[in-house]
Length: 118
Length: 287
Image 1 (tube, rainbow over the protein chains, first blue to last red):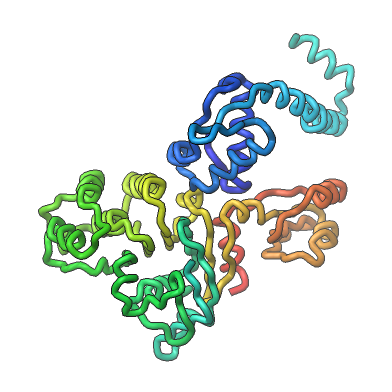
Image 2: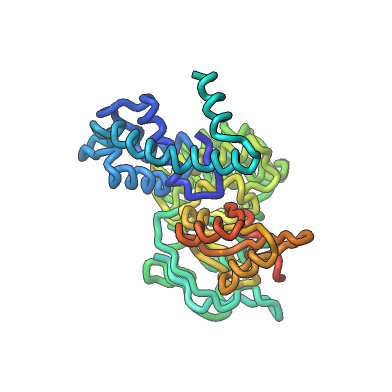
């Protein structure tokens, strides 16, 4: 993961870890890197890394075991999938339809294209 | 906490630091940014007690650092001149630093010396610009001083050496938390290391902000001139550029979801602004 300087890094961290949970790269109840390891690995300030992890704990994606570290919550993947599925249509499909309209591409043409890809 | 109140530093008729107020909680890495002649080195010199303020006060944990031996022992200031004997060999410079300062880690200094490929038998006077800077990094990091001030300690260092500097700074800070104030012009390559950013211009404070908050602060608004003007009215506009009927304005201050939706509806395109660009807009355009 490479952070860009143009949006808060803690949010980029949180999104990156969510992607890993969704893809299965991080398994449920698996321990994640400590904030210091994470900071050293990605060369970012540890306070910034801690803020990203704190957000994930708050959202229930990660949970803390005192004195041991942070782990992926048991139902994190299911919750994230539900969340992302909702966003799929607003974030991806709707902008695509708006662009298609601009270009004079009809819904039938898009459906046909998708059928071919199936 | 480092508390700076109404600080002024004057050199004859030149005002280097101009009635500056600043509170810096300890235990963080600060990026001190400013253009040439903005007063960065003067500010650091006063923090390190190398110079007495012309007016105003500084307190480190409530104590005035000037001519305070105990506090000075807890402060490391690395500047261009290095403040070492030019005819001394590197090994002697490190021996002296270790003898002077109880926190100095001689083993770590040797490790860094090796990493930077500095020959301990070489005299300071024989070092290249980049090697002198590397020696500065060795002295600054190995000092493990609770207050570490690094004033453009990268001049002449090549990209690989600077990378080593940043990696070691972060690793040693994680292992031995302390207050680090780093002044730099190479904002793009170190900004990720900062917890907070302090920008000064012409001796005055421009901003002191959480680095990650700053990353969300700048926004460019691009679109038809009239629509851009209507949208940016009443906001902090850092710069405006026009080409034909299209206008691009850079704003300071984040937009909430409702404002973003309003911009979309008005046919405006929003874009992020990085810390370096924000710095340029905040200290460059209106000079």
